[in-house]
Image 1 (tube, rainbow, N blue to C red):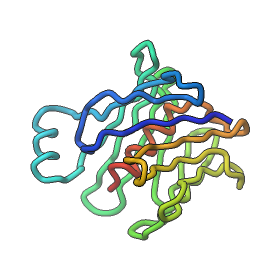
Image 2 (image 1 turned 90 degrees about the vertical axis):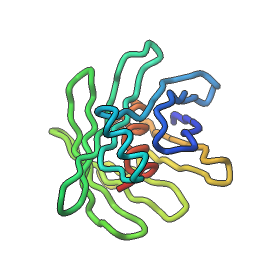
Image 3 (image 1 turned 90 degrees about the horizontal axis):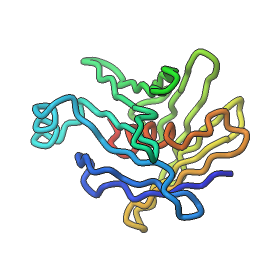
Length: 174
């Protein structure tokens, strides 16, 4: 099992680069929130309205590996898209249940389907073929320290995928 931790920025609009640490204390990757342009950033800050959300996740070589974008609609549920910048593989994320305390999300791409279930004040768990293969948790009692665990059976072994996805969905939210 792979284990990672990081301390997200205390202000969710921040664009500061955040280090992700593995279980041996090494920096595995980095991420930051990005904006389309300066106007989008100002509107987000002034209105506290996250119409546009994007997280970019980088390797230690500062190469963009994954990006996760929120796709906001005028009516209906927001959707998210996670893009592997190396392979151009796209994962679409939609809510199975919305406007509930513990949402469920469906993640699909050309070859697989995953389900995310979030428990109140507990782990967000990723399921593949009915088995839990990864999890994400932010602990408020530890100044929002965030934990990611990826099982060996998980088809997606890159922590960059989970960082972009879960930061966009559960840190910023809809």
